Image (cartoon, rainbow, N blue to C red; front, side):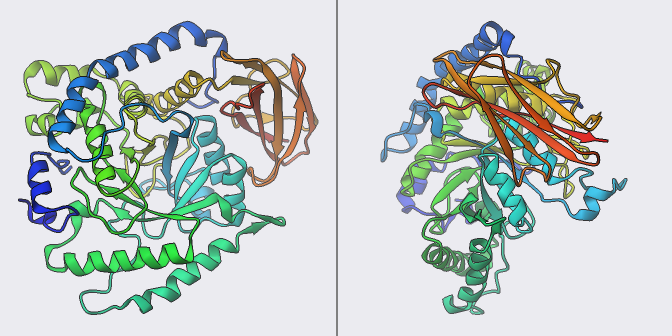
Length: 487
């Protein structure tokens, strides 16, 4: 057995039953148009075709999992509206926003645009770095998102420093966790408590793949003590741990995610294996974490990768099939696979191009990569929500689409919206305007088609406009939104 797995939760017999499982090998400008008038036929057929492909493989996938785990039953149905759609986000510094520095991995756009862009692509969960402040949590909350903070560099094994064997005791951990908790609970913006947008903390990333053998047992006890104190001080929040492939460590986390990306229709048993492992640890479910990129570029070159990721047995036809796939298709199908096979969510690492990670969804200017990965993410999110009966909406300026981050003359804007619902009737559209990045909003509702609202603007403003349709059952659409500059 791999020495890195010797301390993993579960009896030796349970681990022997699972040891056949392979761990992961080392390894446009403008707003996105909803196109609601063209939704019904093409996108529905694409969505249903993908789900049909997934369900076609369900029997063999389920058999694979049940052969390796005879304990808890495996979730095999979608979780519905509870499905979370998320991204990791590295909060840029003021210098990064102010300057685009060639050769340095940074973002030349701010969180104001990023949070809007996430929301209109269906994101409702964000994992962000520790530097996130009250006004930013206000924006996250007002976009309908919830967040987890990561104390270290995103992607680091641990989000805090382990002092070493024999160099710590539980009491040593209390002050730091109290300080973090007090800071969170002190997040108030313009008189509003926005700390409820913070729902948890990330303990670390892929510990099963990284913990060194000499200090593993003591380090696991350190993490367990940290998690226990954290939950005692934050009873309403949850510690999250991102894993490699099963089997997993149990460090008293309450939420589990797993980097079992590169998981699509044909190797969807990997989702079921993750759900089964989460149940074995006493949890209800797990979230699939994926890196956005080309399966053909990452996996096809080496047969060992093809087989380790579950695409095998490897042959030239399989490798050519992987190479022929588009990155749009890969990201789209990864999210649909996570949803169709019952995971409680799908999260991508990483939204913005930072810290040297070339797997970002957007480039340094916040523009979708040319291979369509961010569009695939957004289309999958919209189609999942529409399949759940959520309405759709399109935001217009005097009947015409906005130029995203375009420049407009100061004065009154006449916003209009088109709403559609396949399962009910649109009750109203809620329009909004923010001049401080989404931290505060002025809103107006219209319950009569054609839906419209008017908002004044002043020269020098950076303005975000948004619209959200609400149907008669209370279901709300994903936001349609744009940022513009007023002169």
